[in-house]
Length: 147
Length: 301
Length: 124
Image 1 (cartoon, rainbow over the protein chains, first blue to last red):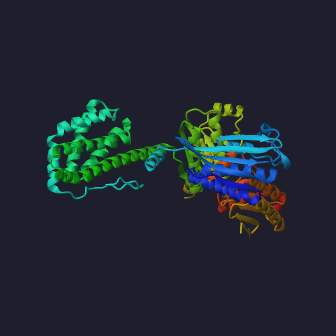
Image 2: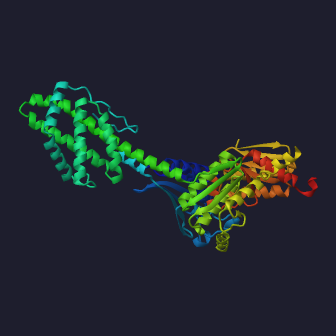
Image 3: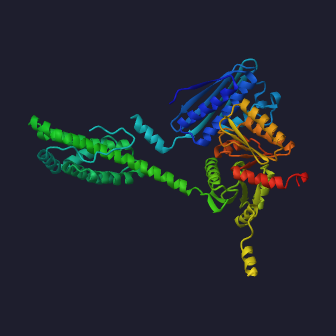
Protein backbone atom coordinates (compact mmCIF):
# COMPACT_ATOMS: atom_id res chain seq x y z
CA UNK A 1 0.00 0.00 0.00
CA UNK A 2 1.38 3.42 -0.89
CA UNK A 3 2.38 5.76 1.92
CA UNK A 4 0.27 8.67 3.08
CA UNK A 5 0.53 11.76 0.92
CA UNK A 6 0.50 14.99 2.88
CA UNK A 7 -0.42 18.21 1.12
CA UNK A 8 0.01 21.54 2.86
CA UNK A 9 -2.82 23.87 2.03
CA UNK A 10 -2.03 27.54 2.35
CA UNK A 11 -2.38 29.19 -1.00
CA UNK A 12 -4.36 29.12 -4.18
CA UNK A 13 -1.79 27.04 -6.03
CA UNK A 14 -2.04 24.29 -3.42
CA UNK A 15 -5.47 23.41 -4.77
CA UNK A 16 -3.97 22.55 -8.14
CA UNK A 17 -1.38 20.40 -6.38
CA UNK A 18 -3.96 18.70 -4.16
CA UNK A 19 -6.11 17.81 -7.17
CA UNK A 20 -3.15 16.43 -9.08
CA UNK A 21 -1.82 14.37 -6.18
CA UNK A 22 -5.26 12.97 -5.43
CA UNK A 23 -5.65 11.92 -9.04
CA UNK A 24 -2.20 10.34 -9.06
CA UNK A 25 -2.93 8.28 -5.95
CA UNK A 26 -6.36 7.32 -7.25
CA UNK A 27 -4.75 6.08 -10.48
CA UNK A 28 -2.20 4.14 -8.50
CA UNK A 29 -4.95 2.46 -6.53
CA UNK A 30 -6.69 1.43 -9.72
CA UNK A 31 -9.66 3.76 -9.55
CA UNK A 32 -11.46 4.47 -12.83
CA UNK A 33 -10.91 7.80 -14.50
CA UNK A 34 -14.37 8.93 -13.46
CA UNK A 35 -13.86 8.01 -9.83
CA UNK A 36 -10.48 9.72 -9.81
CA UNK A 37 -12.22 12.86 -11.09
CA UNK A 38 -14.91 12.62 -8.42
CA UNK A 39 -12.22 12.40 -5.74
CA UNK A 40 -10.21 15.29 -7.19
CA UNK A 41 -13.34 17.44 -7.41
CA UNK A 42 -14.35 16.73 -3.82
CA UNK A 43 -10.84 17.57 -2.64
CA UNK A 44 -10.87 20.80 -4.59
CA UNK A 45 -13.94 21.94 -2.67
CA UNK A 46 -12.60 20.98 0.73
CA UNK A 47 -9.15 22.42 0.09
CA UNK A 48 -10.66 25.68 -1.09
CA UNK A 49 -12.59 25.97 2.16
CA UNK A 50 -9.33 25.84 4.02
CA UNK A 51 -7.68 28.51 1.89
CA UNK A 52 -10.66 30.85 1.83
CA UNK A 53 -12.09 30.45 5.33
CA UNK A 54 -9.11 29.47 7.44
CA UNK A 55 -5.89 30.35 5.68
CA UNK A 56 -4.01 27.14 6.13
CA UNK A 57 -4.38 23.48 6.89
CA UNK A 58 -3.34 20.06 5.73
CA UNK A 59 -4.81 17.31 3.63
CA UNK A 60 -3.71 13.72 4.03
CA UNK A 61 -4.39 11.22 1.26
CA UNK A 62 -4.41 7.70 2.60
CA UNK A 63 -4.60 4.40 0.75
CA UNK A 64 -6.99 1.94 2.34
CA UNK A 65 -7.64 -1.72 1.80
CA UNK A 66 -9.74 -4.59 3.03
CA UNK A 67 -10.12 -8.05 1.54
CA UNK A 68 -12.70 -6.98 -1.01
CA UNK A 69 -11.99 -3.30 -1.63
CA UNK A 70 -9.43 -0.59 -2.17
CA UNK A 71 -10.10 2.89 -0.90
CA UNK A 72 -8.74 6.40 -0.90
CA UNK A 73 -9.36 8.35 2.28
CA UNK A 74 -9.02 12.11 2.41
CA UNK A 75 -8.45 13.69 5.79
CA UNK A 76 -8.60 17.48 5.65
CA UNK A 77 -7.63 19.22 8.84
CA UNK A 78 -7.47 22.85 9.88
CA UNK A 79 -7.21 24.75 13.15
CA UNK A 80 -9.63 27.40 12.02
CA UNK A 81 -12.72 28.94 13.53
CA UNK A 82 -14.74 25.74 13.15
CA UNK A 83 -18.25 25.29 11.79
CA UNK A 84 -20.94 26.38 14.17
CA UNK A 85 -23.74 24.33 12.66
CA UNK A 86 -22.51 21.34 10.67
CA UNK A 87 -26.01 20.22 9.69
CA UNK A 88 -26.70 23.67 8.31
CA UNK A 89 -23.43 23.69 6.39
CA UNK A 90 -24.35 20.37 4.82
CA UNK A 91 -27.60 21.73 3.53
CA UNK A 92 -27.91 22.54 -0.16
CA UNK A 93 -28.18 26.25 -0.54
CA UNK A 94 -26.16 27.14 2.52
CA UNK A 95 -24.56 30.40 1.54
CA UNK A 96 -21.87 30.77 4.15
CA UNK A 97 -19.40 33.58 4.12
CA UNK A 98 -19.64 35.91 1.12
CA UNK A 99 -22.24 33.60 -0.36
CA UNK A 100 -19.57 31.14 -1.39
CA UNK A 101 -20.94 28.20 0.55
CA UNK A 102 -18.66 25.40 1.58
CA UNK A 103 -19.23 22.95 -1.22
CA UNK A 104 -19.79 20.33 1.48
CA UNK A 105 -23.05 18.81 0.28
CA UNK A 106 -21.60 18.48 -3.20
CA UNK A 107 -18.39 16.88 -1.93
CA UNK A 108 -20.46 14.48 0.13
CA UNK A 109 -22.42 13.43 -2.94
CA UNK A 110 -19.19 12.61 -4.74
CA UNK A 111 -17.72 10.38 -2.06
CA UNK A 112 -18.86 7.13 -0.46
CA UNK A 113 -18.16 8.02 3.15
CA UNK A 114 -18.21 11.53 4.55
CA UNK A 115 -17.71 12.81 8.06
CA UNK A 116 -17.18 16.23 9.60
CA UNK A 117 -15.75 16.77 13.02
CA UNK A 118 -15.81 20.44 13.90
CA UNK A 119 -15.77 22.58 16.98
CA UNK A 120 -15.98 26.33 17.18
CA UNK A 121 -12.61 27.69 18.23
CA UNK A 122 -10.82 24.38 17.73
CA UNK A 123 -10.98 23.66 14.04
CA UNK A 124 -12.40 21.23 11.53
CA UNK A 125 -11.55 17.77 10.25
CA UNK A 126 -13.32 16.47 7.18
CA UNK A 127 -12.82 12.77 6.49
CA UNK A 128 -14.11 11.39 3.22
CA UNK A 129 -13.45 8.07 1.50
CA UNK A 130 -14.10 6.53 -1.87
CA UNK A 131 -14.02 2.78 -2.37
CA UNK A 132 -13.76 0.46 -5.26
CA UNK A 133 -14.28 -3.28 -5.43
CA UNK A 134 -11.23 -5.33 -6.31
CA UNK A 135 -12.18 -7.78 -9.00
CA UNK A 136 -11.43 -11.51 -8.97
CA UNK A 137 -8.61 -11.31 -11.45
CA UNK A 138 -6.87 -8.59 -9.46
CA UNK A 139 -7.22 -10.52 -6.21
CA UNK A 140 -5.81 -13.66 -7.77
CA UNK A 141 -2.87 -11.89 -9.28
CA UNK A 142 -2.04 -10.25 -5.97
CA UNK A 143 -2.31 -13.49 -4.08
CA UNK A 144 0.07 -15.04 -6.56
CA UNK A 145 2.57 -12.20 -6.28
CA UNK A 146 2.67 -12.17 -2.52
CA UNK A 147 3.46 -15.87 -2.31
CA UNK B 1 13.62 -26.17 -11.60
CA UNK B 2 12.52 -22.93 -9.98
CA UNK B 3 8.86 -21.99 -10.01
CA UNK B 4 8.30 -18.98 -12.27
CA UNK B 5 7.25 -15.92 -10.30
CA UNK B 6 6.98 -13.48 -13.18
CA UNK B 7 3.79 -11.97 -14.53
CA UNK B 8 3.98 -13.54 -17.96
CA UNK B 9 3.94 -17.23 -17.19
CA UNK B 10 6.67 -19.10 -19.02
CA UNK B 11 6.12 -22.81 -19.22
CA UNK B 12 8.98 -25.26 -19.11
CA UNK B 13 7.95 -27.23 -22.15
CA UNK B 14 10.38 -30.11 -21.90
CA UNK B 15 12.23 -31.54 -18.93
CA UNK B 16 16.00 -31.11 -18.97
CA UNK B 17 18.02 -33.89 -20.58
CA UNK B 18 18.35 -36.90 -18.30
CA UNK B 19 20.03 -40.26 -18.54
CA UNK B 20 17.67 -42.17 -20.84
CA UNK B 21 18.51 -45.59 -19.42
CA UNK B 22 17.92 -44.54 -15.89
CA UNK B 23 14.73 -42.79 -16.85
CA UNK B 24 13.53 -45.92 -18.61
CA UNK B 25 14.37 -47.92 -15.51
CA UNK B 26 12.45 -45.71 -13.12
CA UNK B 27 9.45 -45.37 -15.43
CA UNK B 28 9.33 -49.13 -15.65
CA UNK B 29 9.32 -49.37 -11.89
CA UNK B 30 6.58 -46.75 -11.58
CA UNK B 31 4.40 -48.55 -14.10
CA UNK B 32 4.84 -51.91 -12.44
CA UNK B 33 3.87 -50.52 -9.05
CA UNK B 34 1.15 -48.25 -10.36
CA UNK B 35 -1.78 -49.73 -8.47
CA UNK B 36 -0.07 -49.62 -5.10
CA UNK B 37 1.31 -46.16 -5.71
CA UNK B 38 -2.03 -44.78 -6.90
CA UNK B 39 -3.69 -46.12 -3.79
CA UNK B 40 -1.02 -44.54 -1.61
CA UNK B 41 -1.55 -41.28 -3.42
CA UNK B 42 -5.32 -41.30 -2.93
CA UNK B 43 -4.76 -42.10 0.74
CA UNK B 44 -2.53 -39.07 1.10
CA UNK B 45 -4.96 -36.83 -0.77
CA UNK B 46 -7.78 -37.83 1.52
CA UNK B 47 -5.58 -37.48 4.60
CA UNK B 48 -4.66 -33.95 3.54
CA UNK B 49 -8.36 -33.25 2.96
CA UNK B 50 -7.76 -32.11 -0.61
CA UNK B 51 -10.34 -32.30 -3.41
CA UNK B 52 -13.09 -32.33 -0.79
CA UNK B 53 -15.59 -31.13 -3.41
CA UNK B 54 -15.14 -34.36 -5.35
CA UNK B 55 -16.63 -37.77 -4.60
CA UNK B 56 -14.25 -40.72 -3.96
CA UNK B 57 -15.15 -42.16 -7.37
CA UNK B 58 -14.36 -38.91 -9.09
CA UNK B 59 -11.08 -38.63 -7.24
CA UNK B 60 -10.16 -42.14 -8.25
CA UNK B 61 -10.82 -41.60 -11.93
CA UNK B 62 -8.96 -38.28 -12.00
CA UNK B 63 -6.09 -39.79 -10.08
CA UNK B 64 -5.76 -42.66 -12.52
CA UNK B 65 -5.64 -40.32 -15.50
CA UNK B 66 -3.14 -37.98 -13.84
CA UNK B 67 -0.87 -40.84 -12.83
CA UNK B 68 -0.76 -42.17 -16.37
CA UNK B 69 -0.10 -38.74 -17.83
CA UNK B 70 2.52 -38.08 -15.20
CA UNK B 71 4.49 -41.22 -15.91
CA UNK B 72 4.23 -40.64 -19.65
CA UNK B 73 5.50 -37.11 -19.17
CA UNK B 74 8.44 -38.43 -17.16
CA UNK B 75 9.13 -40.96 -19.87
CA UNK B 76 8.86 -38.83 -22.96
CA UNK B 77 10.12 -35.59 -21.44
CA UNK B 78 7.25 -34.02 -23.33
CA UNK B 79 4.97 -32.10 -21.12
CA UNK B 80 2.45 -31.21 -23.79
CA UNK B 81 0.16 -34.09 -22.98
CA UNK B 82 0.27 -33.18 -19.33
CA UNK B 83 -0.47 -29.53 -20.13
CA UNK B 84 -3.38 -30.58 -22.26
CA UNK B 85 -4.65 -32.77 -19.49
CA UNK B 86 -4.10 -30.08 -16.87
CA UNK B 87 -6.08 -27.58 -18.97
CA UNK B 88 -8.84 -30.09 -19.41
CA UNK B 89 -8.91 -30.93 -15.72
CA UNK B 90 -8.96 -27.24 -14.78
CA UNK B 91 -11.88 -26.57 -17.06
CA UNK B 92 -13.82 -29.28 -15.28
CA UNK B 93 -12.91 -28.69 -11.69
CA UNK B 94 -12.61 -24.90 -11.42
CA UNK B 95 -16.37 -24.37 -11.70
CA UNK B 96 -16.72 -26.86 -8.86
CA UNK B 97 -14.60 -24.73 -6.57
CA UNK B 98 -11.29 -26.55 -6.48
CA UNK B 99 -8.56 -24.11 -5.47
CA UNK B 100 -5.05 -23.68 -6.83
CA UNK B 101 -3.46 -24.90 -3.62
CA UNK B 102 -5.39 -28.16 -3.91
CA UNK B 103 -4.24 -28.85 -7.43
CA UNK B 104 -0.63 -28.10 -6.60
CA UNK B 105 -1.03 -30.06 -3.41
CA UNK B 106 -2.08 -33.26 -5.11
CA UNK B 107 0.64 -33.04 -7.74
CA UNK B 108 3.27 -32.54 -5.07
CA UNK B 109 1.87 -35.46 -3.07
CA UNK B 110 2.23 -37.64 -6.14
CA UNK B 111 5.79 -36.47 -6.53
CA UNK B 112 6.42 -37.44 -2.90
CA UNK B 113 4.75 -40.84 -3.23
CA UNK B 114 6.84 -41.70 -6.28
CA UNK B 115 10.05 -40.39 -4.71
CA UNK B 116 9.50 -42.53 -1.60
CA UNK B 117 8.90 -45.51 -3.80
CA UNK B 118 12.19 -44.91 -5.56
CA UNK B 119 13.97 -44.64 -2.21
CA UNK B 120 12.51 -47.95 -1.07
CA UNK B 121 13.27 -49.65 -4.33
CA UNK B 122 16.88 -48.49 -4.75
CA UNK B 123 17.95 -48.03 -1.13
CA UNK B 124 20.42 -50.89 -1.31
CA UNK B 125 22.50 -49.05 -3.92
CA UNK B 126 22.97 -45.45 -2.70
CA UNK B 127 24.98 -44.49 -5.73
CA UNK B 128 22.31 -45.69 -8.15
CA UNK B 129 19.60 -44.12 -6.02
CA UNK B 130 21.45 -40.84 -6.21
CA UNK B 131 21.61 -40.99 -9.99
CA UNK B 132 17.99 -42.04 -10.29
CA UNK B 133 16.94 -39.08 -8.19
CA UNK B 134 19.09 -36.82 -10.37
CA UNK B 135 16.94 -37.89 -13.27
CA UNK B 136 13.68 -37.92 -11.40
CA UNK B 137 13.75 -34.64 -9.48
CA UNK B 138 14.01 -32.09 -12.29
CA UNK B 139 11.40 -33.94 -14.29
CA UNK B 140 8.99 -34.17 -11.36
CA UNK B 141 9.40 -30.52 -10.41
CA UNK B 142 8.90 -29.44 -13.99
CA UNK B 143 5.64 -31.35 -14.01
CA UNK B 144 4.47 -29.69 -10.80
CA UNK B 145 5.15 -26.25 -12.18
CA UNK B 146 3.44 -27.06 -15.46
CA UNK B 147 0.29 -28.29 -13.83
CA UNK B 148 0.16 -25.41 -11.37
CA UNK B 149 0.69 -22.76 -13.98
CA UNK B 150 -1.81 -24.36 -16.37
CA UNK B 151 -4.36 -24.30 -13.64
CA UNK B 152 -3.81 -20.66 -12.83
CA UNK B 153 -3.82 -19.68 -16.49
CA UNK B 154 -7.03 -21.54 -17.02
CA UNK B 155 -8.60 -19.85 -14.06
CA UNK B 156 -7.65 -16.44 -15.31
CA UNK B 157 -8.84 -17.26 -18.80
CA UNK B 158 -12.26 -18.22 -17.46
CA UNK B 159 -12.51 -15.05 -15.44
CA UNK B 160 -11.52 -12.89 -18.35
CA UNK B 161 -14.11 -14.61 -20.56
CA UNK B 162 -16.77 -14.03 -17.96
CA UNK B 163 -15.86 -10.38 -17.71
CA UNK B 164 -16.06 -9.98 -21.46
CA UNK B 165 -19.40 -11.73 -21.62
CA UNK B 166 -20.78 -9.47 -18.96
CA UNK B 167 -19.51 -6.40 -20.72
CA UNK B 168 -21.01 -7.57 -23.99
CA UNK B 169 -24.34 -8.29 -22.41
CA UNK B 170 -24.38 -4.72 -21.21
CA UNK B 171 -26.50 -2.65 -23.50
CA UNK B 172 -24.49 -1.23 -26.37
CA UNK B 173 -24.95 2.29 -27.58
CA UNK B 174 -26.08 2.18 -31.19
CA UNK B 175 -25.44 4.76 -33.84
CA UNK B 176 -28.59 5.00 -35.89
CA UNK B 177 -27.37 7.60 -38.28
CA UNK B 178 -25.01 10.50 -38.18
CA UNK B 179 -25.28 12.48 -34.98
CA UNK B 180 -28.00 10.24 -33.53
CA UNK B 181 -27.52 7.53 -30.95
CA UNK B 182 -29.91 5.11 -29.34
CA UNK B 183 -29.31 3.62 -25.92
CA UNK B 184 -31.85 0.88 -25.21
CA UNK B 185 -31.70 -0.01 -21.55
CA UNK B 186 -32.83 -3.48 -20.58
CA UNK B 187 -33.12 -5.03 -17.16
CA UNK B 188 -32.28 -3.70 -13.77
CA UNK B 189 -30.68 -0.29 -13.56
CA UNK B 190 -28.68 -0.12 -10.35
CA UNK B 191 -26.07 2.49 -9.47
CA UNK B 192 -23.14 0.51 -10.85
CA UNK B 193 -24.86 -0.25 -14.13
CA UNK B 194 -26.15 3.30 -14.45
CA UNK B 195 -22.60 4.58 -14.06
CA UNK B 196 -21.29 2.14 -16.65
CA UNK B 197 -24.04 2.99 -19.12
CA UNK B 198 -23.53 6.71 -18.64
CA UNK B 199 -19.81 6.37 -19.25
CA UNK B 200 -20.49 4.34 -22.40
CA UNK B 201 -23.09 6.83 -23.56
CA UNK B 202 -20.86 9.88 -23.04
CA UNK B 203 -17.92 8.18 -24.75
CA UNK B 204 -20.21 7.34 -27.67
CA UNK B 205 -21.43 10.95 -27.84
CA UNK B 206 -17.84 12.10 -28.03
CA UNK B 207 -16.71 9.46 -30.53
CA UNK B 208 -19.75 9.80 -32.81
CA UNK B 209 -20.19 13.55 -32.37
CA UNK B 210 -23.81 12.85 -31.53
CA UNK B 211 -26.16 15.74 -31.03
CA UNK B 212 -29.21 13.73 -30.06
CA UNK B 213 -29.47 10.57 -28.02
CA UNK B 214 -32.63 8.55 -27.59
CA UNK B 215 -32.66 6.63 -24.33
CA UNK B 216 -35.28 3.93 -24.41
CA UNK B 217 -36.35 2.52 -21.09
CA UNK B 218 -39.11 0.19 -22.26
CA UNK B 219 -37.04 -2.74 -21.08
CA UNK B 220 -36.16 -1.40 -17.67
CA UNK B 221 -37.68 -3.62 -15.00
CA UNK B 222 -38.67 -1.10 -12.36
CA UNK B 223 -38.58 2.64 -12.60
CA UNK B 224 -38.58 4.12 -9.16
CA UNK B 225 -37.13 7.30 -7.74
CA UNK B 226 -33.56 5.98 -7.69
CA UNK B 227 -33.70 4.72 -11.26
CA UNK B 228 -35.31 7.96 -12.38
CA UNK B 229 -32.47 9.90 -10.80
CA UNK B 230 -29.92 7.80 -12.63
CA UNK B 231 -31.71 8.55 -15.90
CA UNK B 232 -31.90 12.25 -15.12
CA UNK B 233 -28.17 12.28 -14.41
CA UNK B 234 -27.41 10.54 -17.68
CA UNK B 235 -29.53 13.10 -19.52
CA UNK B 236 -27.88 16.05 -17.76
CA UNK B 237 -24.40 14.68 -18.36
CA UNK B 238 -25.25 14.24 -22.05
CA UNK B 239 -26.34 17.84 -22.16
CA UNK B 240 -23.01 18.96 -20.75
CA UNK B 241 -21.46 17.25 -23.74
CA UNK B 242 -23.65 19.15 -26.13
CA UNK B 243 -26.18 16.43 -26.82
CA UNK B 244 -29.91 16.56 -26.27
CA UNK B 245 -31.52 13.50 -24.81
CA UNK B 246 -34.95 12.11 -25.50
CA UNK B 247 -36.36 9.56 -23.08
CA UNK B 248 -38.74 7.02 -24.58
CA UNK B 249 -40.61 4.07 -23.18
CA UNK B 250 -41.87 5.81 -20.09
CA UNK B 251 -45.57 5.23 -19.72
CA UNK B 252 -47.45 8.43 -18.95
CA UNK B 253 -48.43 6.87 -15.64
CA UNK B 254 -44.83 6.41 -14.60
CA UNK B 255 -43.88 9.82 -15.91
CA UNK B 256 -46.62 11.40 -13.79
CA UNK B 257 -45.59 9.43 -10.72
CA UNK B 258 -42.02 10.61 -11.14
CA UNK B 259 -43.09 14.21 -11.49
CA UNK B 260 -45.22 13.84 -8.37
CA UNK B 261 -42.21 12.41 -6.58
CA UNK B 262 -40.32 15.54 -7.45
CA UNK B 263 -38.15 14.21 -10.22
CA UNK B 264 -37.39 17.06 -12.56
CA UNK B 265 -38.49 15.75 -15.94
CA UNK B 266 -39.30 19.25 -17.01
CA UNK B 267 -36.20 20.02 -18.99
CA UNK B 268 -36.04 16.48 -20.30
CA UNK B 269 -37.83 15.50 -23.46
CA UNK B 270 -40.01 12.48 -22.98
CA UNK B 271 -41.82 10.90 -25.88
CA UNK B 272 -44.07 7.83 -25.71
CA UNK B 273 -42.40 5.11 -27.72
CA UNK B 274 -39.12 4.56 -29.49
CA UNK B 275 -40.57 5.29 -32.92
CA UNK B 276 -41.95 8.59 -31.71
CA UNK B 277 -38.64 9.34 -30.07
CA UNK B 278 -36.72 8.73 -33.26
CA UNK B 279 -39.07 10.98 -35.22
CA UNK B 280 -38.60 13.73 -32.67
CA UNK B 281 -34.85 13.23 -32.84
CA UNK B 282 -34.90 13.58 -36.62
CA UNK B 283 -36.90 16.76 -36.24
CA UNK B 284 -34.36 18.10 -33.80
CA UNK B 285 -31.53 17.27 -36.15
CA UNK B 286 -33.33 19.23 -38.82
CA UNK B 287 -33.78 16.43 -41.33
CA UNK B 288 -36.90 16.08 -43.37
CA UNK B 289 -39.31 13.19 -42.97
CA UNK B 290 -38.04 10.22 -45.01
CA UNK B 291 -39.96 9.82 -48.28
CA UNK B 292 -40.91 13.45 -48.75
CA UNK B 293 -37.85 14.22 -50.82
CA UNK B 294 -38.44 11.19 -52.99
CA UNK B 295 -41.97 12.32 -53.72
CA UNK B 296 -40.86 15.82 -54.64
CA UNK B 297 -38.21 14.44 -56.92
CA UNK B 298 -40.61 12.12 -58.64
CA UNK B 299 -43.16 14.86 -59.19
CA UNK B 300 -40.42 17.07 -60.54
CA UNK B 301 -39.70 14.33 -63.06
CA UNK C 1 0.40 30.24 -21.30
CA UNK C 2 -2.63 29.01 -19.38
CA UNK C 3 -5.29 30.32 -21.75
CA UNK C 4 -5.12 30.99 -25.47
CA UNK C 5 -7.59 33.60 -26.63
CA UNK C 6 -8.35 34.39 -30.23
CA UNK C 7 -10.90 36.42 -32.07
CA UNK C 8 -12.72 34.89 -34.98
CA UNK C 9 -15.07 37.31 -36.67
CA UNK C 10 -17.62 38.33 -34.11
CA UNK C 11 -16.67 35.55 -31.74
CA UNK C 12 -14.13 35.29 -28.96
CA UNK C 13 -12.66 31.85 -28.44
CA UNK C 14 -10.83 31.06 -25.21
CA UNK C 15 -8.96 27.77 -24.96
CA UNK C 16 -7.94 26.80 -21.47
CA UNK C 17 -4.71 24.86 -21.75
CA UNK C 18 -4.26 23.46 -18.26
CA UNK C 19 -5.67 23.20 -14.79
CA UNK C 20 -6.18 26.75 -13.54
CA UNK C 21 -5.74 28.07 -10.04
CA UNK C 22 -8.63 30.08 -8.59
CA UNK C 23 -6.70 33.28 -9.18
CA UNK C 24 -6.23 32.41 -12.84
CA UNK C 25 -9.94 31.60 -13.16
CA UNK C 26 -10.86 35.01 -11.81
CA UNK C 27 -8.34 36.71 -14.08
CA UNK C 28 -9.76 34.83 -17.07
CA UNK C 29 -13.27 35.86 -16.18
CA UNK C 30 -12.30 39.52 -16.01
CA UNK C 31 -10.25 39.32 -19.20
CA UNK C 32 -13.03 37.69 -21.24
CA UNK C 33 -15.62 40.12 -19.95
CA UNK C 34 -13.44 43.00 -21.05
CA UNK C 35 -12.75 41.53 -24.47
CA UNK C 36 -16.39 40.83 -25.20
CA UNK C 37 -17.14 44.46 -24.47
CA UNK C 38 -14.11 45.89 -26.30
CA UNK C 39 -14.68 43.86 -29.46
CA UNK C 40 -18.46 43.99 -29.35
CA UNK C 41 -18.42 40.24 -29.68
CA UNK C 42 -21.67 38.45 -30.46
CA UNK C 43 -20.46 35.13 -29.18
CA UNK C 44 -18.01 33.66 -26.70
CA UNK C 45 -16.70 30.12 -26.75
CA UNK C 46 -14.84 28.73 -23.75
CA UNK C 47 -12.98 25.49 -24.40
CA UNK C 48 -12.50 23.56 -21.17
CA UNK C 49 -11.22 20.32 -22.70
CA UNK C 50 -7.97 20.57 -20.73
CA UNK C 51 -9.69 21.00 -17.40
CA UNK C 52 -9.85 17.69 -15.63
CA UNK C 53 -11.80 19.10 -12.70
CA UNK C 54 -14.67 21.55 -12.88
CA UNK C 55 -15.76 22.36 -9.35
CA UNK C 56 -18.20 24.87 -7.85
CA UNK C 57 -15.75 27.74 -8.18
CA UNK C 58 -15.13 27.17 -11.88
CA UNK C 59 -18.84 26.60 -12.48
CA UNK C 60 -19.61 29.87 -10.75
CA UNK C 61 -17.00 31.67 -12.79
CA UNK C 62 -18.36 30.24 -16.04
CA UNK C 63 -21.89 31.30 -15.10
CA UNK C 64 -20.61 34.75 -14.24
CA UNK C 65 -18.79 34.98 -17.58
CA UNK C 66 -21.95 34.00 -19.42
CA UNK C 67 -24.17 36.41 -17.51
CA UNK C 68 -21.86 39.37 -18.03
CA UNK C 69 -21.31 38.50 -21.67
CA UNK C 70 -25.05 38.38 -22.19
CA UNK C 71 -25.39 41.84 -20.68
CA UNK C 72 -22.94 42.97 -23.34
CA UNK C 73 -24.85 41.25 -26.10
CA UNK C 74 -22.92 38.01 -26.45
CA UNK C 75 -24.04 34.40 -26.09
CA UNK C 76 -21.68 31.93 -24.45
CA UNK C 77 -21.05 28.30 -25.31
CA UNK C 78 -18.84 25.98 -23.28
CA UNK C 79 -17.12 23.21 -25.18
CA UNK C 80 -14.99 20.23 -24.36
CA UNK C 81 -16.40 19.06 -21.07
CA UNK C 82 -14.89 15.58 -20.70
CA UNK C 83 -17.15 12.58 -19.92
CA UNK C 84 -15.73 12.01 -16.45
CA UNK C 85 -15.98 15.71 -15.64
CA UNK C 86 -19.60 15.78 -16.86
CA UNK C 87 -20.44 12.88 -14.57
CA UNK C 88 -18.75 14.59 -11.63
CA UNK C 89 -20.57 17.85 -12.27
CA UNK C 90 -23.92 16.15 -12.45
CA UNK C 91 -23.32 14.02 -9.38
CA UNK C 92 -22.18 17.11 -7.50
CA UNK C 93 -25.35 18.82 -8.73
CA UNK C 94 -23.43 21.71 -10.19
CA UNK C 95 -25.80 23.90 -12.03
CA UNK C 96 -24.66 25.35 -15.31
CA UNK C 97 -28.19 26.31 -16.24
CA UNK C 98 -27.95 29.48 -18.28
CA UNK C 99 -24.92 28.12 -20.09
CA UNK C 100 -24.99 26.20 -23.31
CA UNK C 101 -22.66 23.32 -23.98
CA UNK C 102 -21.40 21.96 -27.26
CA UNK C 103 -19.18 19.01 -28.04
CA UNK C 104 -16.51 20.85 -29.99
CA UNK C 105 -15.62 24.11 -31.69
CA UNK C 106 -17.50 23.27 -34.89
CA UNK C 107 -20.71 22.63 -33.03
CA UNK C 108 -20.14 25.69 -30.85
CA UNK C 109 -19.77 27.95 -33.86
CA UNK C 110 -22.84 26.41 -35.47
CA UNK C 111 -24.83 26.95 -32.28
CA UNK C 112 -23.68 30.56 -32.02
CA UNK C 113 -24.48 31.17 -35.70
CA UNK C 114 -28.01 29.95 -35.07
CA UNK C 115 -28.41 32.01 -31.91
CA UNK C 116 -26.90 35.15 -33.39
CA UNK C 117 -29.18 35.01 -36.45
CA UNK C 118 -32.20 34.68 -34.23
CA UNK C 119 -30.62 37.33 -32.07
CA UNK C 120 -31.84 40.65 -30.69
CA UNK C 121 -34.11 42.72 -33.00
CA UNK C 122 -31.45 45.34 -33.69
CA UNK C 123 -29.17 42.64 -35.19
CA UNK C 124 -31.04 42.95 -38.44
